[in-house]
Length: 447
Image (cartoon, rainbow, N blue to C red; front, side, top):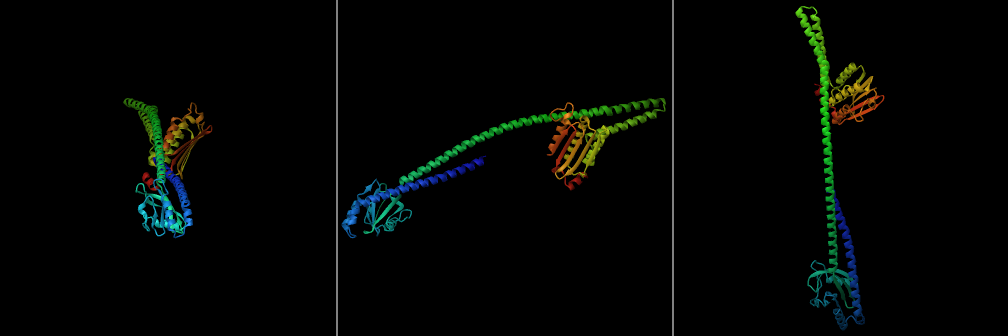
């Protein structure tokens, strides 16, 4: 924002200066034209004053020449205005306010900047008249100042007659215009700075308010997420506790009774003691299988040993055997191309989806499809149940299971799509290509 404002300020200043320079140039041209018109009027008045004498005289009439010089010497105006006369050889004949110039030859005279003065005046007189701008000492102060003159010629006498005016007032007007322009530019910069400061304060306050609001929202979401994690942990612990109590504990109690019965029979010499030991061994085998099942639910060894496809296949087979729901599993061999995070996420999503189908869907058939494609990996789980909207007591917002799926897939920058109707539910979990390992890394992972 600061860079943009700085660029705009520089552009505004440049454009303002360009516009002001054009206006000042136009003003200067107008003022110079006014001075030139003034000079022409002065020379016209002077010619009218001596023209009758000049018209009646011959080229060698010295009395007439003297009379004309007297007339011109008497014609002064203002503090620094007078008429001058040079012959074509460069000798000054009239300079009433600078008498030190009279009767001296000034051919080749230049001002302090090297501009020819007298030679140029004579040149213009020979051509019939013209304007010339140069530096000249002011009679009133003796200091050099810019002057514009108009010189005409008396060709019969070989004289250059003219007058000039100093441009101090013109330069002062132009300087005042430039000062006003700079003042306007400074004022514009000041307003831009004030507006920029106000905008920055507004952005700062707005950003601070948004930051505080977002932080509060993030804190509330973090608290909710933490609470969900605690709830999930407690739910998992409760599930494991129920599994241990309902299955392992009962099996161990049955084994204990069988072993106690075998002990009593052995102490009495009852030949049926062997039968009781065999029942205990059968119960112990069942307990071992149940421990393996619980361990597999918590963390399947197949996922680490053989990969995602065999792990999900074992999960679907166990689901079908436990629930009696027909499961069709299709996959393309991944060759352990998925990284560990992606494999765990897809396995947990499949586990959660099958649990929801078992508890709520009332389905009779489930299809699980797992394959890779150009964008990554895709897993589709579809059932023919009653759909999410028909689940008794289902809330309007997604349940814990769907939230867990969405959060797992979101952590991997993937997408989760859930499409449900009265004829069934379809869950699609897609993992981006960034979680697919190159072949060499996949071989190391499998090794």
